Length: 242
Image 1 (tube, rainbow, N blue to C red):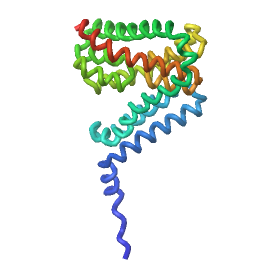
Image 2 (image 1 turned 60 degrees about the vertical axis):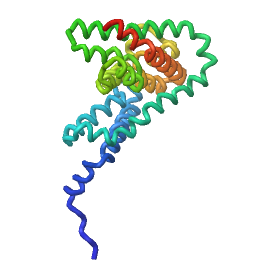
Image 3 (image 1 turned 90 degrees about the vertical axis):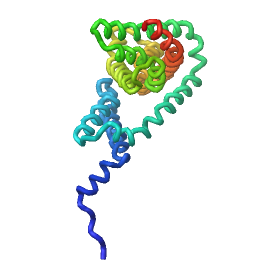
Image 4 (image 1 turned 120 degrees about the horizontal axis):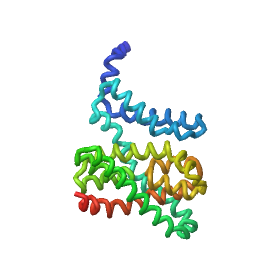
């Protein structure tokens, strides 16, 4: 004789305690965000990462799910973050012939953008009397999240807080970058892409790829060079600034 199915409440209790729920929630939220992004004709205001973050935040609040429990499932996506960052070297390699002819001006732009990013964040935070631990996190957030978290440990900042700052910076850059660059009358794809890669990290690079392949290649270069330079120089500069 067939045994009756357990009550739906018992099934939910099992699912809510499983890491699989957090993984499904994360992937589903991003899929919904990507769907909205595509149907809006890739409008930067409909950034899929931004939509996914909002949806996941609302869901875990409604489910009363502790972040530690959520991360047990989401860590599988987190594990792929570093791999995805390294994989961006492929478009750089394919377009290296055009990249190397502009390397001088790109390095100048990289140094100007990197220093400006740190100085503005730290100066505003100190002017507002922000706690020193938060200021250290703002110093480290200037590069893409996986590298920023490593830098955070070296400058005695919270890796989690630094990751939040880095992702927030990426989202804002991906959403607002188009309008800022249009206002500045920057039209060349390589210039727009490099600016997004330096300022908005991985999320900005993803946005650049969705718009134009040349912009994506230069965004990858900008993000990668910024990450390498930041990993070397930011801990040193943080020590000088105390």
